[in-house]
Length: 586
Ligand code: ATP
Ligand code: MG
Image (tube, rainbow, N blue to C red):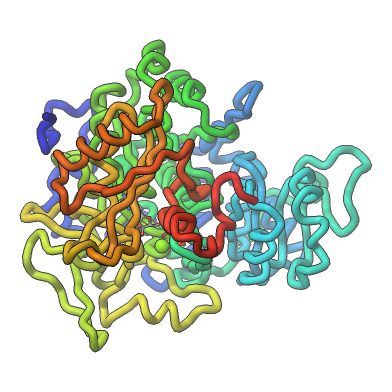
């Protein structure tokens, strides 16, 4: 058996972590100190893109690479802070010339191409609210989100426009301007602009828009794991959180090469794929291609990545690809690994340690929180399976809702309840677009209630139990799917596991598991029995699954989360609900 803890020792760090003394840093932390560092006054002007870019473009880091884009094939293209600052000024001027104002909404629908990054940051400079769409969305999810957010400007590629938007354009009355990337000579569809032309004609100096800390900056749709995606609104002041968490949870240092693998279509790809590294003046690698295990190992090696932020689904795919593939690569620069989006099974934390030579640091947050809240911090011991501890500036607790709607703080250790966060922080969402009532329901006094269930142990580490909707009530026990899935993943045959509660007359809900297998393993009665036995031995009969079904792959959101609600709906023959974010759907 592996130990329950991975100890950190000061002499084990190649670079001293930014946060060495957890208690001390929590005590001395204040948002005013962060403001002072970034040179902003509490109620003075604040623009997230100016902080992220112009601060460096006007200083000693002007010539440093901000982004290194890796196309699917061909040579990497680099853009320095100074180049990016000028290009984004140009884009802001393009918007101004079109009459796009502060507060208007601009959506981006493109792969991870340079133009997307320029459009996002340029729009923010203009005070225009940005909403990223995932480029694999089909026409329906695109139309729904454009309607919810009354999108005025869309930046997309000529190819995606033809394939997904042209046919529905007349159903989108708010959409006034479409700016296309990659237009071929003489072929501009009606009602669109060639972005390259507009950029060529625009000036590369832009007078700052007068945004303040509370002005809306970003509109992020949630992953849709539990239902219809919600549009969460974030303000310019969120930059403070991106900066602070980049320092504490991702341990960004000035000379790092950072790779956040999340697509900017999701909040992680925006907050940490774009904003946090820029705020720190750090170089980011952007891979334009889709996941491929060998390619990813090669990027880690050839791009000299030092800090890597990825997700459990990607880690599980690397684990599935086997150790032989990894064998040919070397990563002497790599010094810090982190993961977000789903619970990180202990097996995956250990895989990092054993196969990459570094443990993976799980951290927890949501679209609504706008930034990392709870993390396994670089200098703290890791308890594999735990999300870690709240960051400086964040107060997390376990709450329980009474029947009359009142909310109490749970004082005892290891009692399961709803994960809550106290107070207000800069990147906390300021609303669900068009759903005021739903937004209000997330708060009780000074608490924000996350909808996730967790417990806190005696050392202050938080443990994820499950999403409120996914937790299984069986014969009086509360069973978190994560615990059961983690045990199934310990078995060498299992690549992925998803666990649901299936209505049962005797016990209320019985635990059913769906698993997909690693290459070289055959599904069948013998393996089913072996897995049931393994789970019973590790979890006990009350918690272990009673049924196991084999699937070629599990249904996942495009951001990589297992959709347990879909496993359940399919199992019970119920309607599938909103599947706009389902991977492989459209
Ligand atoms: P929706 O709200 O539309 O159902 P979603 O909650 O998956 O979708 P996101 O905001 O992208 O949308 O995801 C946040 C959620 O992901 C968290 O509330 C939590 O359930 C889960 N999550 C994120 N990170 C972790 C983690 N490290 N451990 C466990 N769960 C995590
Ligand atoms: Mg959610």
